[in-house]
Image (cartoon, rainbow, N blue to C red; front, side, top):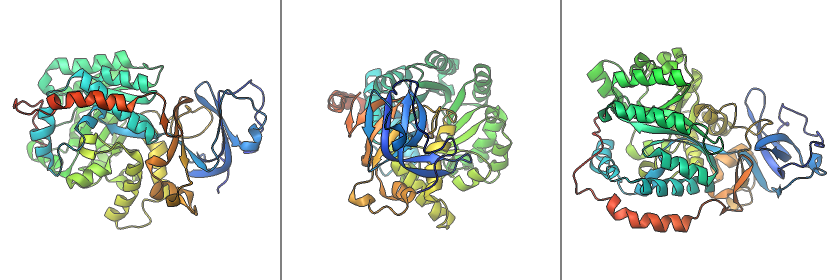
Length: 463
């Protein structure tokens, strides 16, 4: 369909070095050229050794190569594993519980009272269920920002997924909240055989004061950590910040020094034109995570993807937590990003299917701080690979594979999910998690979890 990748000739015969760990043959592989542009290689083969992609070539080139395991992927597309750049995995336990509400009621009357009932057991069960959902949807990496994060780290280790994890804190917790976030980040960094990276996780500028934000920036710089927080989630937050402080949330982050360290900003639908030069001048690795389904549900604006892209800010795809988004389907986020951008920009030529695939792969990898490790099928990258069936009536015929993947394919078309060369799902069968067992155990915890009669809440939402 398009020329082979720039990193090597497609007819290279793979020999020597002994047997491979895994060889995938017969697929159509999504590849990137030296400029990062997406293309496709037909009848492709992917060779995996020691958790990394060793070669991307053609099927005939690996005919004589011995391998511990082979997958015949004829009729399927091979993609880099999808990345959920911002979520709260344990919140799957609250899926569908608080619907059709404005954000302040959603938080104050439902979510924050219920979250005061959280136990580590519920967090662990929710995180495991979320991991199962993401594996089935072709997600191989996620960025999580929540409570009881050691338990979430345990779910990551069990599931086989890759994750960037941060322990959320509010200034109302006092110095202990920030200290606990730092301690978690340093202790869990590199856990799960290196699949876990960590961030500092102040909740948001409206729940974390300027002194705590500035201290977080210093700690991030000192320890080489990323910061993952909510900011400019919607226009009302931005307007409230301007009224109270005379600065937008982005300007608050700038003043605190958080734009001069690596930072992942969740949502950003309230980013204004005046914020763009502030972001552009930041010296850190700045990225934004966009979860369009949730914005549609709350009636918010959407992330200004085009404006951010024009100033070089990566925008990764996300779902947010399932309590607001109802799903952890990054496939849907990719399609909605393309469609919502066309609608808001009044431009059918923006965002194209190939641009949407770019956001789902390379830009999402950069957003979670793993731009050199994942996000493309290329030698040296971690072997995070998904196979997607193209045999369904809804994906045929294929005239433009990029359009088919973005606008026709579904998460249920993912047949195989691989992380670090390990198969986590084969032919739609999960290999690392027992969903019926998780669901049954979680069900016993729900009555106590959703009880709001105590009148407590973990925080107040004022925006």
